[in-house]
Each structure stands twice: as structure tokens, then as C-alpha cells.
Image: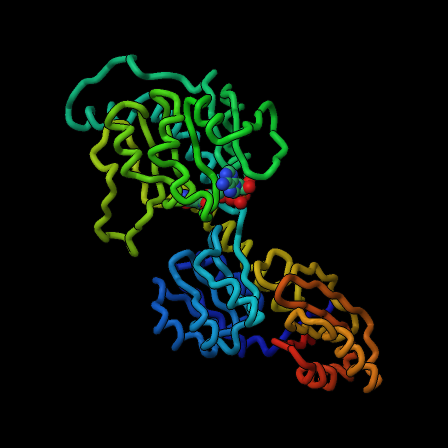
Amino acid sequence: MEQTTSYPKDKINILFLENISDKAVKYFQQMGYTSVRKLGGALSEAELMKEIKDVHLLGIRSKTQITEKVLAAATKLQAIGCFCIGVNQVDLKAATRNGVAVFNAPYSNTRSVAELVIGLSIMLIRRIPDKNKAAHEGIWMKDAKGSFELRGKTLGIIGYGNIGTQVSVLAEALGMKVIFYDTTTKLPLGNAVAGKTLKEVLGLADIITLHVPETNQTKNMINKTTLKYFKKGSILLNYARGEVVDLDALRKCLVEGQLSGAAIDVYPWEPEKNGDRFQTPLQDLPNVILTPHIGGSTEEAQENIGEDVSVKLYQYLEMGTSFGSHTIPSLSLPPQEGTHRILHIHKNVPGVLSAINTELSKHKINILAQYLKTNEDIGYVVLDVDKKLSNQAQKLLREVKDTIKVRLLY
Ligand code: NAI
């Protein structure tokens, strides 16, 4: 296969923020990119607007906010790699309008979260946090009262997506019954059963674990009212998003004994950096495990994320493959053979494709392969053309009305 590139590799500026795994840095260095910069923390909007001017590829994690202003300053930016699960930190509408591809790693830390949820469920149902605390304080608390096995208990999974389904499989392997609630119809794995309503699942489960995204519907999904549906003495785990649970209401239920334990990893407000003060209404409660948003933070996950996002960025940069992008319509492309490839991103309005074809045929530029995909806002056309005519074709395509971005791979 011929090696292609979009631009001299030493002129492609790559900036990685937020201490992204060295695996990503090494990957691009091995691919021949020499201008790869890695910074430890996140940058503010103003700092980023300054830094981003000459950047072609940007790597971030969840703390860096990519606003409309940042994108407007990023005139050379082709793609953003979110080296994490979510993409909420990026203004996706603005990135789409600017023709900037946004990739993430939706599955890389799925297993890390799922394993921890199972581990925490065992800890909580055995009341290990209390016994551990007592032992550290020199108190002997040998007692079976209130300690149970997972086997035979019912796990309620709210959100049966990537993580929810993995938890489902692991829980059944431990002999648990699984019931789940999802707003989309999902194929139940193993012997899991789909509940009809949130209320039904909350009322049947001994342990409830949340694996929903943050949306208007999931905001405060677990609140004063829904907490009343929980089985008396049940346990709640939130390793999804902080806004999903009303923590004051949860505290009340824990204090009153409606719930017997909880494990929380995500909060409506989280500190910016390590060492910052952190406060939540759940501090100092018995049988409550609090973790600092580390559900997906394992060395394996970081490595997987580093590799997954790097490969997507590279394939987009060097082949035009946009599969997995949240902004550019998804195209999986074969490698071009003996041709040059032009990537054309345009507003999704009628007539652009015909304008492209008319311009090229007017100048006798034969299109050897053409791929098109559109979404609501933009269209993405990939054209493989004769090597000798590709520069001319690129110039012509820049002039087509409603063009957002044109790139040439040679
Ligand atoms: P996913 O998108 O694969 O699954 C989410 C599921 O929730 C989907 O099946 C969806 O249909 C369902 N859903 C959406 N709205 C719902 C509603 N109102 N009621 C019931 N179900 C609803 O997402 P994935 O990868 O499983 O992640 C789940 C959550 O975990 C996300 O919020 C993600 O941000 C969070 N997460 C947290 C981590 C941590 O470090 N604590 C690490 C990784 C993910």
C-alpha cells in the first residue's frame, strides 16, 4: 500500500493537553510526526485561543472546554481527539460548522468501570467500609449482621449501554439476577430482563447501578421522589455522571436507613485538579464509598484510549476515514491506489455535489472514485483523482459555494 500524507509531516502540529498517555505521543512519533507537544494540565479558553492558532491536531481529556471561540481561533485545526469517553466538553455544533472532526474512545474504559461496580457492590453489601474504618481505628467489629452475599440478589441497571451490559454479564457470572431499564429497546444479555419502567426496576433491585449519559432526562433522575421507590435497605452506585443524582436527597435516605449504602464517583461539582478541596453532602456517612471520578481510570484504560483515539486521528488525517467522528459524517474508506484523494467538507445544502462534479468535468478532471455522506448540517465528499490533476482539482473545489474545508492527500 502506498504511504500517503496530507501535508509534510514535520509541519503538522500536534498538541496534547491534560497529560494524555505517552502511548499517543509515541504513536504519532513512530508515524513520522516530529512536532508533537504534550502539556500537563488543561488550558483556559484564553490560553487555548493563543496556543491553538497553528495546531492541526488537538488531543484533550475531559477538563479542556472547546468553545465556539476556541474553534474560531483554530483556523488550521483538522481534528480533536477526546482521550476519554465523553465529548460534552466540545461544542459539537460549532465543530461541525467548522468542519473539525471530533473523535473519542467510547469503549476503552468500559471494562474498568464494570469491574469496579462489581467490586464495590461486594464491599457495600458486606458493609466493608464500616468494618475497614473500625479496624483502622483499632476497633474489632466481627459481626455477620447486615452482611450479605451478591449471589441470588437482584441488580438493577439503569442505562443498558456499553457499561451497563458489561456489568450485566459480570453480575450474572456471580449468580445475581439482573433487571435493567433503558429508554431504548435493548437486547437483554444472558438471563437479564428488561424492566418496563424506572419505577419497576428501582422497586425490585437490591443494588441499583446507574450507567446513563448526562441529558435533560437523566438530570436528577434519582431524586426525593424516585428514591422512595427503592427497596428498603438497598444500595445505590453512581459511576455515570454527577448530575444524575440529587445528593442531598440521597444523604437523607442514607441517614434514615431507606438505603443501606452507596458508592459515588461523580458529582455535580468536581475539583479542577488533584489536591483541591472537595465537598459533598455524603461525607462522613456509614457504608458510603466516595471515589474521585476514577471509575474508568486504570492504566489499561488509559493505554486503550491512547491507542484508540490516536488511530482514529491518524486514519482521518492520512486517509480521510471519519468513522467514529461526532461531527463529520461517518465514512470508512479504502486506501487510495495510484490516485490522490481530496476531502471536501461543505454545508449540507442542495446543489453542492452537482457543483463539484460540474467544476471537475468542465476541466476534464476524471473522478476515479467518489464517496459521499451527509448529516443534518454538513456533507463530506471524498474524491480520488488523477495525481497530475489533483492540485488543480483542489483549487477548483475551494471555490465551490458553501465549501467549509478542502484537504488533499497525496
Ligand atoms: P452508552 O451510551 O453506551 O450507554 C448509555 C445507555 O443509557 C444507553 O443504552 C441509553 O439508551 C441509555 N439511556 C439514555 N437515557 C436514558 C434514560 N433517561 N433512562 C434510561 N436509560 C437511558 O454509555 P456508556 O459508555 O455505557 O457510559 C455510561 C455512563 O458512564 C456515561 O454517562 C459516561 O459518561 C459514564 N462514564 C463514567 C466513567 C467514570 O469514570 N465514572 C467512565 C466511563 C463512563
